[in-house]
Image (cartoon, rainbow, N blue to C red; front, side, top):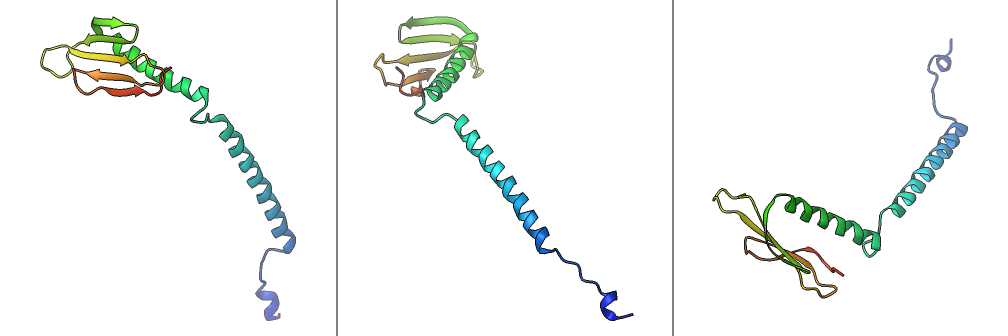
Amino acid sequence: MSVRSQCRETAFSLIELVVVVAIMSVIMLGMGSAMLIASYAVPAADDPVSGAIVGARATDAIAAELQYAVSVRDSNATMIKFAVADRSGNDVPETIRYQWSGTPGDPLNRQYNGGTALPVLANVN
């Protein structure tokens, strides 16, 4: 027996490598197409749909707090001030106020217990 027949080397043939590269190209093309289609599903920041989603989240947050309101202290077309049960442990109801200036483009602000008013929703129209 010759030494060559006992130590048989194994390797990929050129045809096998070409087939693998072709398969990988098809898979990568499919993944790229899927990423492109998925990117169209995400709304842009200046898209009206994006604004509607942000507005819906703010509305849900306000509704969740109003659910626990024990009294409405004041309200008008651009402001609501209400009390919720004590959250800080001092036996005094907490006061929450949502206010918008009424000017298109101004933010909707939330004020908690007379503190600093923080914007909840920017650019309200």
